[in-house]
Length: 248
Image (cartoon, rainbow, N blue to C red; front, side, top):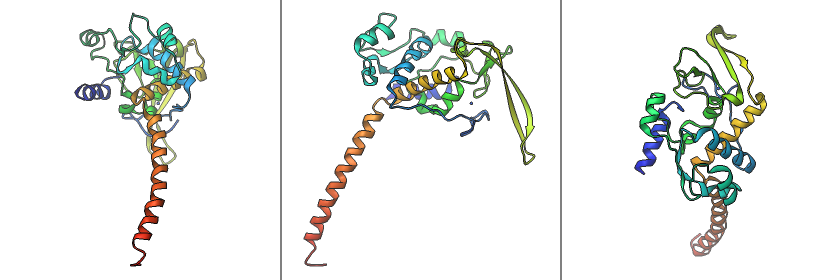
């Protein structure tokens, strides 16, 4: 439990280190995440993206590789496609990067991502991963509209390409001061905009899944329990009527 609380605190505090839904802390409005926990193909794609692009710095120490059976992957697929450093299928998704090295490189240790979706929310993650832009004023050369002055570089930049952002003051229809975000594509990536959004959706879907792998099973069991309680209520009510029939 102590390790879980520490991980949650790091995930909330680090720079994991944005169209409308709720507003982020930086004022950039969040897009609604289109993830679907029932889409096994999306979850499998998200697992592949996580291992290839995130697991270099971020671990998921509360998630074991063999739990990926639940999203339709067999042991051979996990071993051949998701294990690159001699890990065993029963091990947790740990990362070789140490806390000291992470702090030296980024200024703060990259957090474990086991519960990042529960800490930040799927909408925040979906928008955050799509709003990196080039900024020569930062150490990494990257910044983020949702998380200004983020310590994390854009890990998916080869897929999205390089984008620039101009932030200007504006006024809404009522005359209130607002902020206008003007995006521009500086260099293309391997994916077009819709393909990149789908990639981020898959990654967020996987991060939501590892935050609570038993969520779908818990919901299914909950339906059965409610149905059973409904049946028992009928019998309990009939028993009550029979028991009190001489009084009522």
